[in-house]
Image (tube, rainbow, N blue to C red; front, side):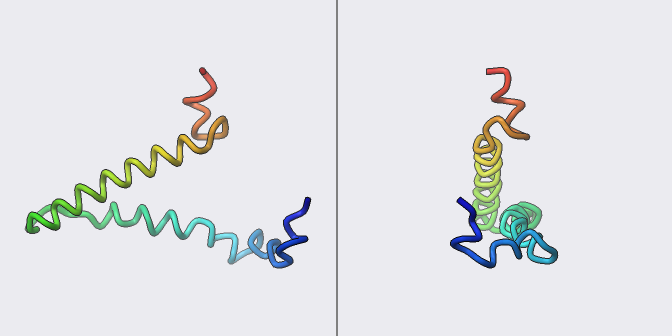
Length: 80
């Protein structure tokens, strides 16, 4: 079944500039890792920074794991 049957505007997401939208949410999510700094911060902000790094590491693991036998997860799943 074709997606455009249900969403007649779906083809627009394959054209510029909307083709970039699918990358915005992950880009914003991982941009928080670049904003983490530990110098001259209180204990609460340092704790949030460590939590941000841990959440980013878990998210990267989920991204790799969820791709299955497609890249980049193929490095893990193909030898199995």
